[in-house]
Image (cartoon, rainbow, N blue to C red):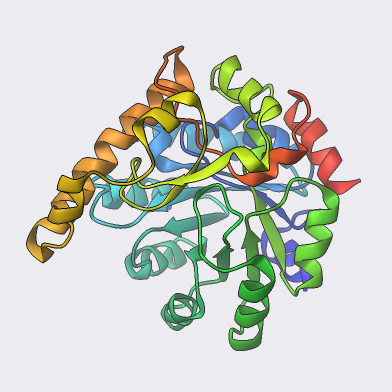
Amino acid sequence: MSTSLLKILQIKHPIIQAPMFLVSNTSMVKEAMKSGIAGCIPALNYRTLEELRKALKELKEAKVEGGSFGFNLIVNKSNIKYKAQLEVICEEGCDFIITSLGSPEETIKQAHKAGIKVFCDVVDLKFAQKVVALGADAVIAVNNEAGGHRGHLSPEILIKELVSHCNIPIISAGGVGCKADIDRMLGYGAAGVSVGSPFIASLEANVTEEYKQACVDYGAKDIVVTERISGTPCTVINTPYVKKIGTKQTWMESILNRNKKLKKWVKMIRFSIGMRATENAATKVTYKTVWVAGPSIEHTKEILSTQAIIKNLTC
């Protein structure tokens, strides 16, 4: 099955460098392509459409044989930039788009017109079957070992269930920090893997040295799930600040989230506040350290170049 992802993206290794808010950038993706894997960046990492367009042009010029690149789109109403971002990506072109947190229907329609593949984040069979019906080219199976917004099923259960019921490639997301983890996911039937957290501690990542070092110093036991970032459960490092503010939504948010009319707006406000807090922690020194990461940082022992991290994953 791993050969299917290699064929779709024309890459040497069945690995996607996962899109990470604030962490992923063109430098990382260029190094990923040189190493024979695919790299992906969240469109939300760019404040303006012109910055996004510039990144697309830069990566197209840097593309090498055996590598590919894509962008991640948040496709729900919390991302008011979504439609404009999709338009720019389709105009400039890339190899693939990964959709998250919403219906990918419009993205699939527009991307396919532009010759761009679409992979969709899902957490269970119900959502996987929906995106298959919409024409997705592959499924990103987000399991309960993923960093950031994670699923609720183990990698083995989720991959095997999706492989048994879906006729498109299944790419496993979560729980990969070394080559043995990749072999395990492929053994369950995955066509490839999406790997994020190990690249936080890369030389190319545009985050603080403190954030990178935290991924070295902390391990799997230090990862907790919080509702205080985006309104959706998200994994973070259990720093003293996270312990102080807690991981559960406030009593007011809990009450408002039960109101169908107000729920969407509460989630949008929480998303905005949480993203600002995450950005501050990732890009400047602050005591409010909310660092997003997954349990696969257990295998992160030092800050390395992107190419060195990929070598550790493939050799």
